[in-house]
Image (cartoon, rainbow, N blue to C red; front, top):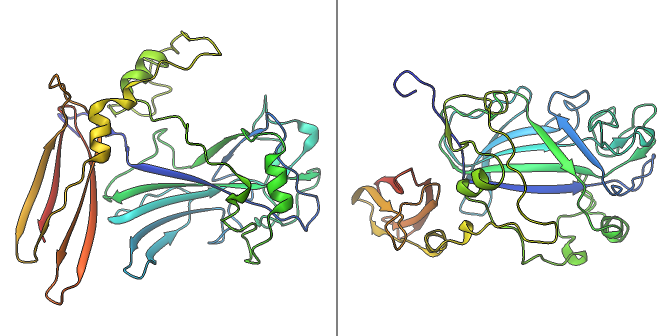
Length: 334
């Protein structure tokens, strides 16, 4: 709180990865998503609390990385959604969506909930409830917060239930090609293996992140970085900004390519000291050529030091610049 008011700051250092699983050996048969297919699933949906890696289709983990390349993780379930209160190098939320489809109810255009269901045992290839005549690949969304600081976090809608929206964007026929051509991994619950990318072409012309200013100018004119009230949808009078570009034109988004942002992406600080040296903090400012501050830019410092036995330990710390373009990174004793 500040001056008696609640203050909510958006988490920006997020990563997300979708995973696809399927089982081609069970009935009903697994089919690729048809064009236009969409669905929404919540962590408290019927059947979501079974199957998965931890006895449910959602998990929350807080992990530190080990020298041998492994991870040391504490894992909990996900309903209700509870954020870890301790710090860790990576906090992850993973939620797997339903795999049974009632084709008679359509592709989710008007109702993105009722046409899908979890299997009766929660497993990817488990039995489907009565009336669900098709099986679809399971989509698992993994969201990670790097350099998780612990403390108090909450979902932006003020809810304690996690949800995932899916809209099919596969090139027609491509997912089916992968499903039919990718050899099973043999590992229970994971089919196919994660290296099925021999069927795919890397997209090097992907959309860049948008700046807050562009979202407010071209989409909806409301603050989302620092706010006093959640959830935003029911507490905002902002309307959707009318579209100003044609369907065959690129949207007028350019500030993600600003010099200051690109500079930060390439900037690296390395500090190497004896372990008895104190470096209490590193203060950085992000400015453009006109000395205009850039807020919301991620600054990452990787530092390492030699222990008495000659080992080198590395640590990466990321922070987001504030409204003045300033970021303070506390290192402490290294």
